[in-house]
Length: 339
Image (tube, rainbow, N blue to C red; front, side, top):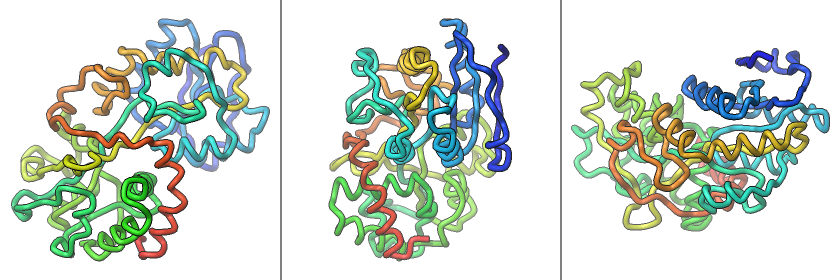
């Protein structure tokens, strides 16, 4: 059977059925939208002979689809970005625990679910970027973003974005709810504009002069180092500096891209094989070279574009604990008026 790729809208998601299942197949539901992942899938098929049938869509759409399909779901694997979505899938009963000595050994404990229902396979550091011409002393920690001296200078994404939610969830885990609420209020007070756009838009805000300080995941900027990105030409990038926050404290906050075996996976053994393949050196290098991410497995070489950002200390907080703070984070966002 020929592998297929389907980019889905909400309207078409429920109308498309996967092919009839057969031996040697794997049905993958993925919210990763990177063309470079094609190499991951083709190499897995070349190595194992297992055909990957793929459904792609937004994370919430895929979760809703799996929930609606129930016990009849053909999904074998869910791949998505951010710890909060992986934890949401677990809480919805959409994943199952698996036993894999390889995954336990290869993936650091802080990057996997405490019940072995999801595992992280790549990471992105969420760091501070700034206009070097206008900011002589940039904030060196996340807490510093709330300093009144940066009033009217900060751009950020909306509170509904999972990256925003997970960052505040990490602040809660590292500093407590009261400190996290004060921090969120301080950042709101320092906004240069209403929260809007994606991570690349936060970087473009520095180029346009709308803001002087922003937060973005590293791979958005590393991608602009590797190839042309609209609104971030080489001459503009030279004006942007960056800080890996909290290097004398908890370290830089990390986001995950990861996955788990679906609760009703009809091809469970193949699903586990695929998960283990994603932890291989080869796949880990694809995550970095193809999408400018940090490998989850220690010792795997970084892409040049990623290495160009420099070395740093990463926050070693358990991300499964961070994910459990998301409801509290959203409550705090609402309380402080973070749109």
